[in-house]
Length: 291
Image (cartoon, rainbow, N blue to C red; front, side):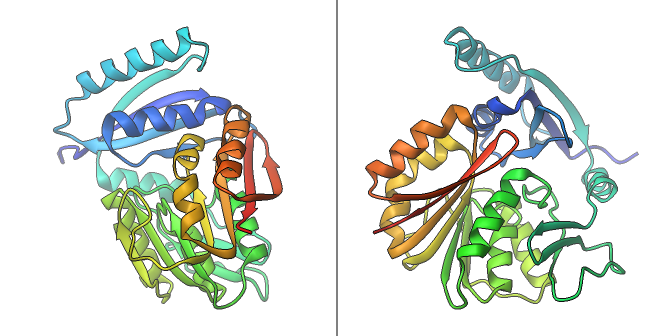
């Protein structure tokens, strides 16, 4: 019998607490956080995948203490914690079972690499995608909101930076529409998935870098797109603003009502002008521009 190589640790929370659950999981593990939300559900499952050798007992205790602290302060609701052993092969098969072709946004469809016979409507672009263990299948509302704003604003030849790129889906969508794309993520698994997805689509990224902030060597961007947590968006507000060309746009997603005002305030303080807000269920996305 094959021994499991990974452990999955999941927090089941209300959608409004998804940002905080993600931030907590990322802080205690350093791993990339994946989200799963069933259609029509008000609950979100935030999960990390860690090596089998990880001391999960210590990690669970720290999470329990952090959640309890936030609940006492009224900053977070109940969170159900669960874990399971996962074989990489089983993880891939689970994605194949649940990940079907879908419309990402107007004129663009995401098609899993194993659905070879699927053809989108005439004239639509196709992203052949295999997310592996990286966040970004196109199913989540935050990805769809970000993609919609990104592609509406994008012009051929624009320089685009995808911050916290996950599977590379947003950078890849921009590349398909003629952008020069740069992307970064601090998770090695995400970078491997992003590189594989670019190769599968015969697309080229100007750079795919492992980093926890915008690399200095990246050029000024016409558009920065960031589908991450509200707390991270707030922390990055000044660095995003400094990396935007004048007249450039910031597309941000992954925000709920809890993080709305603080995120808008951080962007205003960084000198960015509000343009529009988009909403889908509990989730919000924004477009700001640099004057």
